[in-house]
Length: 285
Image (tube, helix red, strand yellow):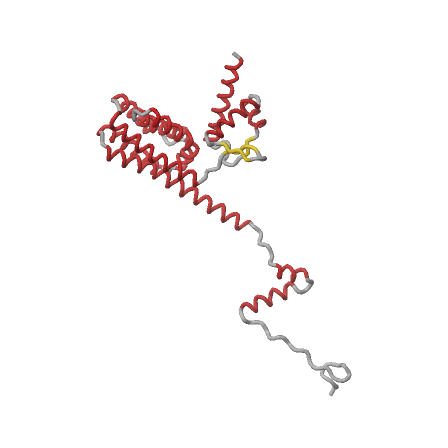
């Protein structure tokens, strides 16, 4: 009985931490302190440690040697590779569903799509729409009749959850309408038993999400790179540093350099010849 209770606590900790990451309550790149998380969840550190290890297997947490565990950052290369794989698998699954979907499958998908379209634009409605959208794609994979393909796609979608939630919150009203149209097109392809329609909608849908998310990531990287470049203090050049260390010469040296670069430096003034008495210019008149 004690073992069952421990598993239940660990499962709850896993579920709560996963939701905190997906909803960005734990930010990408944030360090995960087991003691603080255990206190927040009201459990001991053991279930938190086990939950974080599971989340690492899910790709939502990463371990850095000697530094601890962190929330996974959104990596553009990984996004592209995962979406390319999803396009292949989902296109195949949708084409199989054209051949194997039952009337019950079509009815379930119709009901799910109606529920999605009935949701409002509130944060709660958008969150529920994302959740139901994921289930919609999992249900199509189930309708393929291939349990191994279904299991693989479910695991892939689970790995993509972090990105899918990011996509969902970035969607504009126009993009959400495009998503609804594409979901309707999935359903129309199943009803018509049309392989060309199935291939087209699966590729269009996955590629659109991939391209938008990659554009967002690239824009964000360029933004932070510009900030970092602006905030980074410029190191003085060795010659400038030496000039600045010499009292009274730093400003003159900089002026000379600026004039020289424009070809405006004055020629050097030669000293006058000394006379026999050692005075400048010889005898006085």
